[in-house]
Image 1: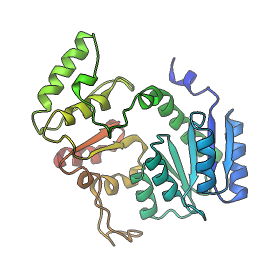
Image 2 (image 1 turned 120 degrees about the horizontal axis):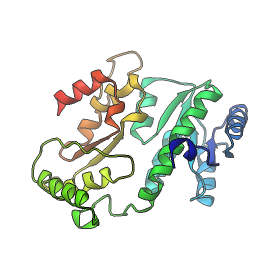
Image 3 (image 1 turned 45 degrees about the vertical axis):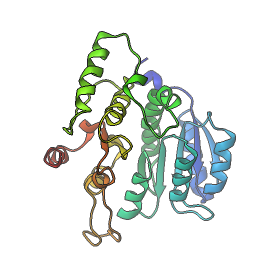
Image 4 (image 1 turned 30 degrees about the vertical axis):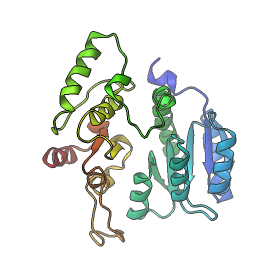
Length: 269
């Protein structure tokens, strides 16, 4: 099935926003593109709805500034519950710290109000593409904090057996490793096995979806920034490299990064 066919599937979209006007606009945008909206007026209501319809919801559109439970609290709750769904966060307050915190908390994409129907539709389409291609992998993830070893990878393919052999060698060193392959072939699985098979076992395994980070925020999210480094930087952020210190930083879809950032990554590793 090609991408165009995948994206025509009717999906269930959870919209969490305390503004009734915004909820209605998002509801109309979702329905206009053939999907089914589910509406919640705050984070707590959104979580309750999600629990009732777990396995049915495909994508979440989440406001960041809400009473009861804000968007960041909602993202943290998803993580604590082990719910792995693409989340598109939106807010009228487009400060750098809010964006960085949301992306660090696992948001898939970020839009600033007022968001056009075309922009939200495109973001939902991209999120569905990821959700459909990775649903099988998500369903098979283990609950033991990603502690996947080479014995967990079963394959009769000579090519895959060769990959496993090379990965086992890589696990014994600290050199940067590049894993190439189409979406869904198991690159993250191999990356986790490399970590588990070496001295970094038990250390942090930090995953970054490079294609989901707004280009103007890439450097702050990866490398961090100091308080006051630029307008809107009201707090210090360590960055993903620091988060992964001693463990593994898994950069997914690295080819989607701006070329100048790719150059800086080469220097960093």
